Length: 183
Image (cartoon, rainbow, N blue to C red; front, side):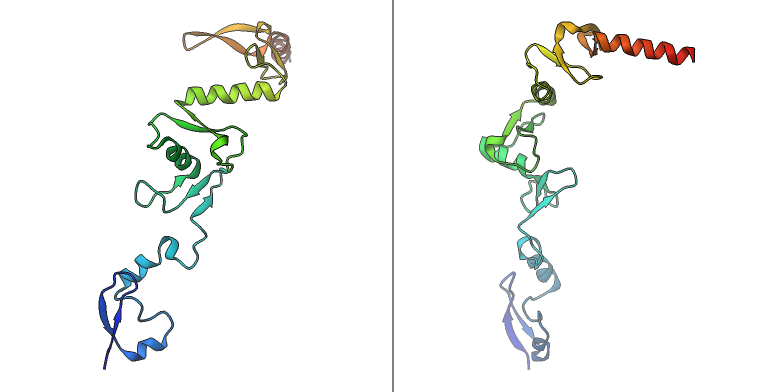
């Protein structure tokens, strides 16, 4: 004698032996496939809201994906919801306060490309060092903000840029190099 049950996932009617109802968890689904499908994402007993903090500090959302089986970073999802459409391919999202897990819309800036994002970080480093991002640059050696006239012109990939080390530090670097060669 079998008992008719309704599947908890697909709603299909199936028959089960009464002896299997004694075991906890049996008799709820018509097949293993329905059981596994029902226990994915928010249906899983160990579900913790779908948020994971990745080792790099970014919050990832599970089950909120554009592609099956892939997680999406929460700040990207929030930026896309704010825009009303997907981010352009070259765009990236900047955290104003530097905290990668602070995904409030007021803390996010959508950058058109990585070069603009890099420029925002450069300006923040100058401001954090106590300089003016419009006129100053931070020396890579002494870490002090100095006026851009304190840096020698240099060329990088055919473009004229300023050296990463200020003129006084560059003199010290040359002295140290000469001493190492002489030793």
